[in-house]
Length: 264
Ligand SMILES: Nc1ncnc2c1ncn2[C@@H]1O[C@H](COP(=O)(O)OP(=O)(O)OP(=O)(O)O)[C@@H](O)[C@H]1O
Ligand SMILES: [Mg+2]
Image (tube, rainbow, N blue to C red):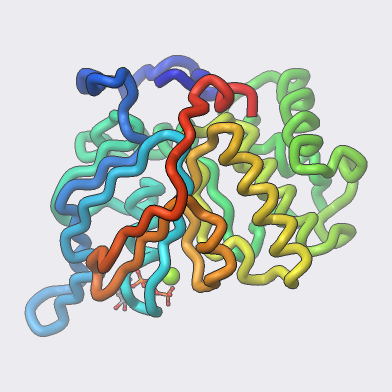
């Protein structure tokens, strides 16, 4: 990995990295024949029915598909919130199959920043404290925590709202706090599930501009969305149906900004 070392220090207990590919970089996401099957017999549901998906550093992928097509199930696997029934998943080169729950949580905290539809901020708690929280979990000292949280909030344009609590912020501002919280650990992947689902059109436009900026600076993004206007801004659109990738269309090339990703 060429990006910064995560908050927990170097690769540590989740090491066991395979050799890097010839270009010297592993994909961020490498899913091979991944399945997720719920229930048994007549009640069996193949929520993810055999997905191959490789996402390289710097890509910006929108995942679309009808309700029940398996998007959230796939996102839970990508986010290490759930384990596949079959197949193999390498996250930034780390094979997630061999990890127990604790190591999976470590890997998740170190590699992924999550953004949810409903912001998921802690109420009655300042923007600053909300953004500091993942750093506190990672055991980072209070002074560095503060500095990094302020920088992340400035990055999303909220340098003048540090002490505001969620109920004192607009929906769009709350979602930007959530983006700052996702960014503050310097993850290799930003994973968003319907991030603009609760935003008005103006806040949606601002959020899409912010995502584009972060991606231009080298961040890798995967965004689940029902909205065509959101997918149109991505570099690549993956459409799911019945647990399978129906099509995978590249709208824009991936610009190699690997060096830039470090500072964003
Ligand atoms: N815990 C579970 N147990 C049994 N079946 C499940 C479970 N979770 C999801 N499913 C089934 O798996 C399929 C895929 O669900 P999933 O939530 O991934 O769809 P989705 O594409 O995210 O839909 P939506 O757009 O409505 O959020 C659905 O048929 C769903 O009923
Ligand atoms: Mg869903």
